[in-house]
Amino acid sequence: MLIVSLATAACSSNANTAASTESNSTTATDVAIASEISVATNIDGVKTFGPLLQEHVDTPVSYPQSPPVGGSHDSKWQNCGVYDTPVKNENAVHSMEHGAVWLTYRPDLPADQVAIVRAFARNHTHVLVSPYEGLKEAVVANAWGKQLRLDSVTDARLAAFVVEYEQGPQTPELGVTCGGAIGSPIE
Image (cartoon, rainbow, N blue to C red; front, side, top):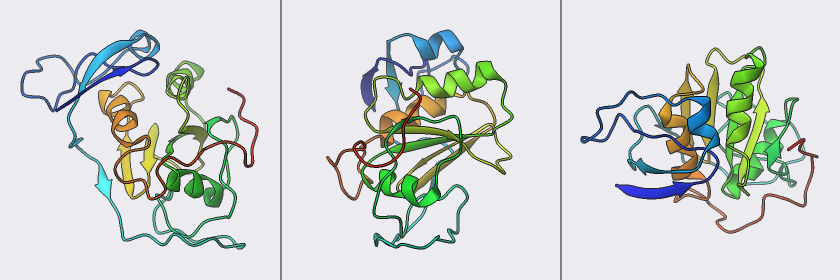
């Protein structure tokens, strides 16, 4: 078990820990305040994909997952931060190659739920947040070769995913920036 201090996106419990008796959800207040969280390194529901290509291409890519979790991508990465419009898959995939967690949310989510997802990008160098057309779930968390689909933005596994996979062990190009390329985040 990994104990992590998370300043912007935190939960007070994790249903996967044996000692926890609390529910598997957080509130907007939990997300906005700093607290210590206990994160199991095996988050329930995370799917793993691979092997994934790491080549730069100048053409659109047809990815087997939607949203994509890796593979061939544009030579320019998407600057991490919050966007209120969809970003290009090929640029977001390049950001994930650099260790970004890409949080995609259903465009029709109520504003208070979008605010919760956006909070995960605050004070994080490698978190990308954007709406994504065609999602059935409220939010889908993506990292290189990893994906977690959630029906609620207050599910504690969302915070655990960010902690585990932002510049996590799955990152092919660990330590590379997620800024200085394309896109102008609104936050």
